[in-house]
Image 1: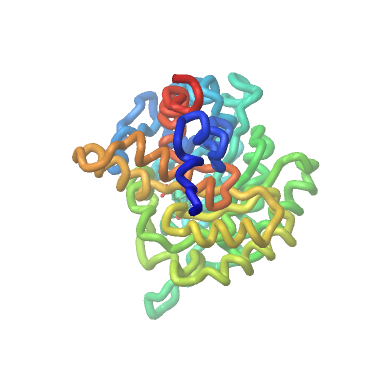
Image 2 (image 1 turned 60 degrees about the vertical axis):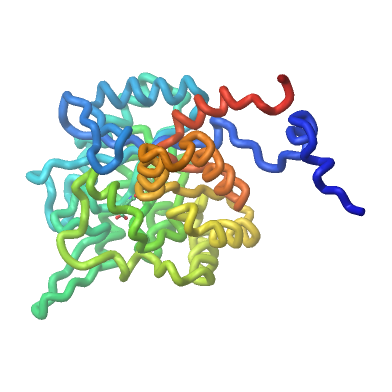
Amino acid sequence: MHRPRRNRRTPAIRAMIQETILQPADFILPLFIHEDSNDVAIESMPGVTRWSLAGMLSEAGAAHALGIPAVVLFPKIEDALKTPTADESWNADGLVPRAIAALKTAYPSLCVITDVALDPYNSDGHDGIVLHAADGSLEIVNDATIEILCRQAVCQAQAGADIVAPSDMMDGRVAAIRKALDAESFTQVSILSYTAKYASALYGPFRGALDSAPKAGDKKTYQMDPANAREALREAVLDAEEGADILMVKPAIFYLDVLASIRAQSNLPLAAYQVSGEYLMLKSASQGGWIDEKAAVLESLTAIKRAGADMILTYYAKQACVWLSEHEERVAR
Ligand code: PBG
């Protein structure tokens, strides 16, 4: 008789046969920032804060001290600065460039990642430039958007970003951003491409946090259809050819099959984004007393890593590091 349970018998044996081990170096912490001296609790994401620059610095320092290697910045931009062409997205004195510089000065060893997309800056709330047709329909214009994205990426690199992360899903943007960065001698700045970003219902709380929901229409002409998996493999091939350093799948838990199949196809490092809706589902269920938050969150992060992610963007990053350090069931007892 085969007895697989022998390998589960004691904590010591389980520790040796454990295939997936989470560690602080797996996590990237998203940070919301704004032009304000207050740190504000985000209503749509209990436990998450929109930071002043000073608050952001102390939060990033605390995360880095726990062993988290990287943060990714998401700004809330004042309405008065939003324009149809998102000019504020490449203002060298803007909020994000100042935040990058402050982070790199305070914590030179912290990896600073920036979001490349126009939605926080664009009066239409779309990731690209919007053309309004006479019949009321919208077109998100690909190539004109890419020009702005390139300016935005170069501006972020100038401020000291280590990695730029285009989340806009325009075609050809990775190659264009690579070329623009190289032309300005930023050959060492990496591109983390949102390769397979789905038009998901799970971004709602994030859009609430940044007030960045589209004013009209939806994102289905650029973000992917949740029904499609082969299309993600095509996007992965293109991003690799265009020079992406790291690929990403987003959201994470509903798309583990996509993560696993990109992992099987590509040798590039792979990231996954546990998005705001995933955070909120775990948080609400645990606040309701219906699930054990620590166990459920660590299980979700383990599942994402098991499916093939090398790194995970998660609002639970700091908390997970604390939980992992408590979680030494492994050998000693
Ligand atoms: C926009 C962007 C979004 C997220 C990250 N970058 C929202 C969107 O595409 O509408 C969502 C992240 C989350 O939900 O946690 N470029």
